[in-house]
Image 1 (tube, one colour):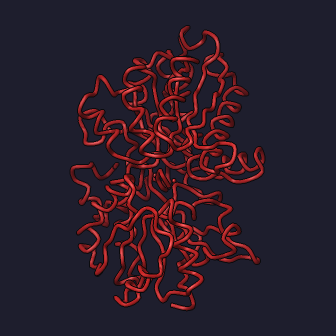
Image 2 (cartoon, rainbow, N blue to C red):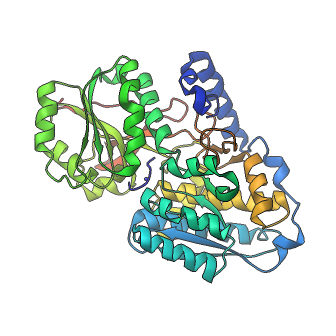
Image 3 (cartoon, rainbow, N blue to C red):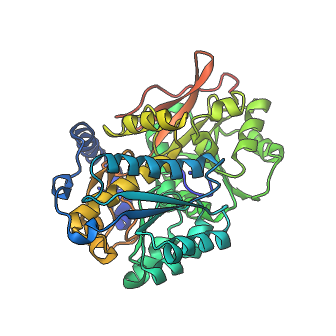
Length: 443
C-alpha cells in the first residue's frame, strides 16, 4: 500500500506483465503462496544461517532510519519503531554474528533538502552500515546521488517512484546500493489496481468508474498504468482526471462524477485523501469509493474521521489481522504490545528490511556493501508482506521488490463497522480475505 507521499513479478516479468492474468497461472501462484505462508521460509531461507565472517563481527552494526516526523507522524513512527523492534529481536538472538545492532533515527520532515542533509549525517557523520526508510518520492530522488557517492546500502521502505530503480538500470555500478524492499513501485501499484478491478469489480457492481488521482509525482506512473489498461478489463471509464494537489473542496468533482452516473470513484490519494473521503461520506454521494487511499491504511483512521471511512476501500501492504505469511500477525501484535498501537504499512516493510539485511549479512559473511549486495540479489526472504525477492540488474526495475501473487502482493481492505467501531476487513486476494465487499446503503 501505498506508497509514498501517501503509504507492496514473479510469474509476470515487467516486460510481460499482461500475461500474468492467466487463470491457471494465478491458481498455481496462489497455491505456492499458501505453501510459503504455511512453511514460513523463503526459497533460499535455509542458506542464510551460520556463515558470518570477522568483518560482520567487529563492533556494532548501525542502521540509520530516515523517517518523516517520527515523533508524531504514524508513517514515520512506524518506520522508526519497527527498525528498533527488529534490532531488538536480532540482538536477543545473538545479534548479527555477535555484532549488536543499533538504530539511529533522523527526521526528513518530508523535505528533499532536509532529507539529504539527514542522510549525510547518518552516512558521513555516523558512518552507519545501512540506511532505510524514506517516505516521499521527492526525498528519495534527492538522495540518490548521495547514495551513489557514499556507497552505503539503502533499503527503501516508503517511496514508490520507479525513477530510483531506473537509475540503477541506467548505471548499475553507481546506483547498485539502492534497493526497494517496499512498497512495490508506482507502476506495479497501478498494475495492482487493474488486477483488483479485473478480479472484483463485477461482483462489487462497479461496471463504470471515475479515476481520480492527486497531482503528485508518486501518482504519475499509476495514472499511466491505469490509462487504457483499466478499460481493457471491460470497465467503463468516462472520467480519468488528475486534480490539483491543493484541492480541498471536492464537491465540483463529485458533481461531475454523479452526473456521469458511474458506480464508483476509483482514487489515488494521500495528502488530499481525508478531505475527499469525509466529503464523500458526509454528502452520501451515490457511488462507491476506493482505490489507493493512504490515510485509510492507518489502523486508527476509522476513529479519527468519526466512522466516515465505513464502506470505503483501499489497497495496503498488510493489516494487523491479515495472515499474509506466518510472520505478519505476530509482528503486528509485537508492535502493538511495544508501542500501544498497530503499525502502518511502512512499519511492516521497514521491519522486513532490517531482518532481510541481517540475513544477507550472515549469508555474505561480511557487512561490506559490495559483499552484501550479491547476497540480497540472490536472496528469497519470507517477510511480513510476502516473499521478498528483487529484480535483477538486467530487468526493467533492478533492485525493486518483485510484484506478483507469490511475492509482494498488496491486500485490499474495506472499513466495516464491528461492535460500534471500525475494522479493516480484507476483501482480496482470496487466500487472505476475511469478508466480502459491502456496498454503502445510500448507493
